[in-house]
Amino acid sequence: MSVSVTKAGPYYSSGPISFGSLRSNFAERSSGMISALDFARNTNVAEQNPVVPDSTENEQISTGSNLRLSQFRNSVKKYTATQSGTDDNASDANQPGFRMGRYNSALVMTGIDWSGGGNSGRDGVSGGFTGNLTKNIQKKIIINGTCGSVRTGQASAALDIGVAVHNVSIEVNGSVLGYGGKGGGNWVNPAGTSNGDQDGENGFHAFQFGNVGNNCTIFITSGARVWAGGGGGERGKTGDNGTNGTCREARTEDGKCTCPSCPAGWITTRACYDGWHCDRRQVCNGWGNCWWASNGNSKYVDCLLEYSAGGGLGGRGGKGGNARGYNNQSGSTSGEPGLSGQPGGTCLGGGTPAPAPGRGKDGGRGGNGGNYGENGQEVTSEYVAGAQGKAINYTDGSKYLVLGTKNSSTIKGSYN
Image (cartoon, rainbow, N blue to C red; front, side, top):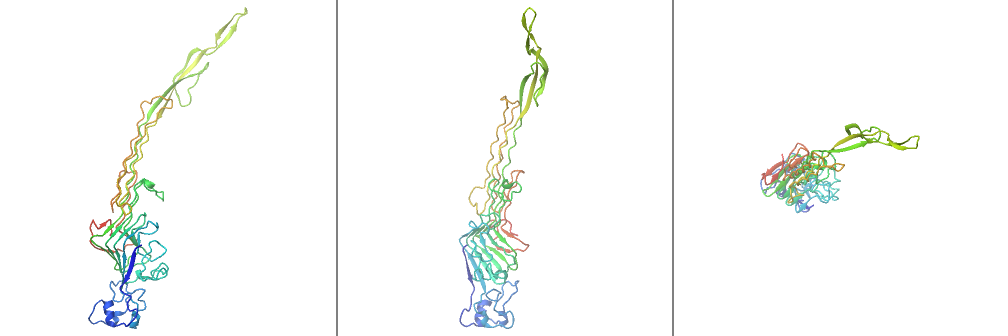
């Protein structure tokens, strides 16, 4: 994570403190009358630009009439955090690409340590929820580089904590590119729901914000890119199976001297009829003459078996295209063609089916992956295309005020 924090301050680490310097550093003007009470620490979280803001480094400054100049030792007016380079979550699946919340040095995306206290400081993971994000000191985050996500369900830049934040302004000069969903057939659905990985995977958000308090803004410059990830295309339709053919096998059953029956499943096409002698026996008279005599006629039945020769299986639909996103900035988004249908079955006895079974139909082409901030392509009612992410997403009803250059080049996806 490439982020550096600078401060307007800390002021008066040593040396004298004068009201003139307080006017310059905190009232931000070089002349004019000003009252000592104007330098009381303002704790109103709705105040957009307090003269003396509430911050962890200003907590020694009085909020009332017992104000003393010595209380301004190491005080601050505002913070600025500047991101540069590339921040993504390729090394940590459970974090956003650029994490703007509480500082935690154990994580790859460490967060922002406004007051410099480390993990145990007020802005650290062990500092509770009373750090500078919850106070009215102005906190500006400048994104000059690229923020991205290669993990589904994780935003490219996020500030997501359990309490409302105040006076956070984000200036985007660089790129915040959301996760692009994979096409149907290209991913594994861990939940195992619906049609699983045959559906297009959902894209995800560029920015993700938790509870929003007062005076939170995002300023988009003309060269910025706040682009939500697109949704993956759905898998193509499975081709229809071919029509069944019919196989016919005939046979004659020989019952010898008694009428036989056709085997189970066969039908009788000619009932019991006589043939030549079924057997013979030797007959002799008293003079020693012998001859052969018939024991009767042979008995036959003609049988027929009819069964289906299955039509060929339809070809599997082509894989859906992967969507545009940080994880697919230049690769193909096109769906793949389906597989060819298979030929029909044959007769078990080796004969030719009549009519012959049909060949299975070819599978349909997979849907194309969506562009940034767009849904994946629907090509069939068999599966579902992935939904696009949002340019800016919120977990509650409050919003960041979006300012600056807002057009189809700078913002792709919904944001309010």
